[in-house]
Amino acid sequence: MPELPEVETVRRTLKNFVLQKQIEDIYVHYDKIVEGDTAQFIETLKGQVIHDIDRMGKYLIFKLDNDAFISHLRMEGKYSIETPEVPLQKHQHLTFQFHDGSQLRYHDTRKFGRLKLVNIETYATELPLSKLGPEPKDAILEEVYPKIHKSSLAIKTLLLNQSILAGIGNIYANEICFTMGINPYTPGKKLSKKRVKELLVVATKILDNAIKQGGTTIHSFDANGITGLFQVQLQVHMQKICPTCEQEIIKEMINGRGTYYCKKCQRRKT
Image (cartoon, rainbow, N blue to C red; front, side, top):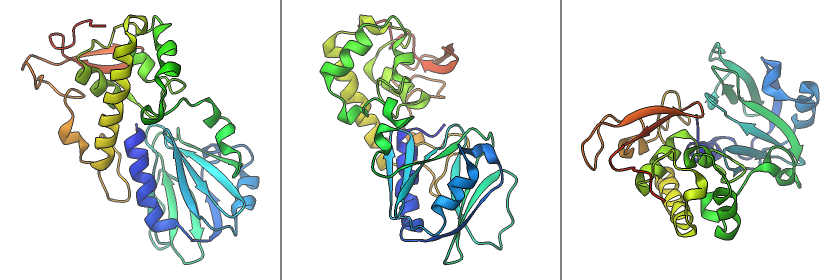
């Protein structure tokens, strides 16, 4: 699943290809990709120019002349720049046709991704964006700490809760726990305020580093041919041997998510 660094890489890459382009037409090949009225989505955006692409957590926000639309890539979503001569692929479910002849196509093998028309002035206050917590770099300790400390849920589960911290997915949650030397099963209420402060610092550093490297290439992620390099720096996710103690990395399921950790280096610390 694309997480904050991957979505940021997609945002930066797409800006090189689609800004100042006018939408001539939109072809929706799978109606459920668009939330709400598909016909309204098409008619509203036709003729408008894409001026910027914003991001909140894992969401992209395309900003046009008078309107905007949210794009959530979910598990397998990705964009590509094509020409009309290139045949439509099986899992390309939506096409933006630009006046200059180029196309922006949305590809999603699992069809989980969604696009939604929103108000360009107030999108941050509309669902689903209004429910997002801050990104780690913007988080205020006094606001985040109570949300973590009051919970009996595993810290791994809390890190995936987008209403607490936005942008962290399974890969980076595993990496954050490993870097902190914390067992992913540790209940949030066991973390001291000092440890939550450390968590915000660690999460910010890991996400920033991943952004600099272009995200993590796991399964199908890529951004118009720019694949992530952070995978070479993963310490625990999908690894077999702990880089610190050289013992076996364990994979277990926590709340339905594959969790990698080292039992020796990640004892149940608070």
